[in-house]
Image: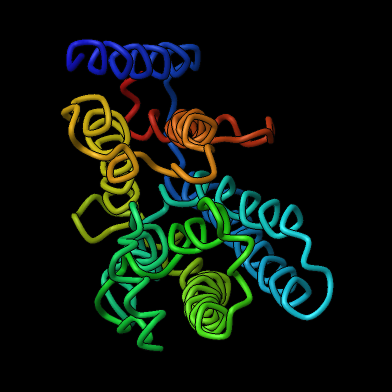
Length: 281
């Protein structure tokens, strides 16, 4: 099984490098590359994440007060979660050196949710601490609360509803902080740091890229595949309750390839590929 996982990621790497080889070597515009990442890829990704988080909050408020339409609520969560797969690779700058705790990915993207802790917190009406219990708040805690068996029948119970309100506000604040910091100040800093030291933008971007690659291989794939028969699958699989794990994994891998090549759907910027930074391909 481990060999299968390594083969999958070897194929991804070869595919990415091969595509990079199609460009002829030339003097590389590092600042242009960083501008492309910041303005055309990273900032829009965080902007959409901010918008989708607000939509989820609005849908939750509507659910509580009016509609009780669980399908709308689950759809709003799914839209946010799926888009998160295109954002979590950018774990740098205001999202990597986060002002409150470790990182945005740690704060809102820790999985699986610890259902024992969060159920205890709900019963005791206790909010998850800002700098602890990341597995009792964020995207995957909301997934459990919105999708687990029987959740619809108890979702608007007073204690449960209050807990959702709290973690929803924490998540929105985290996302909005990163987006506003990136768009207001950090984008300019990121583009101007064109050196090759460990604190410069190319190094930070490359480290974030590698971390995402390793996280998919070791956490999203290896751990669930190598679990023993007596262990609960929900303790290992991303998005277990919503059944969105495979869809998310595919998009996460697709995003890593696109970041490596330096573009999404905007062909105008394909010449600013990350893999051409040192004129190697």
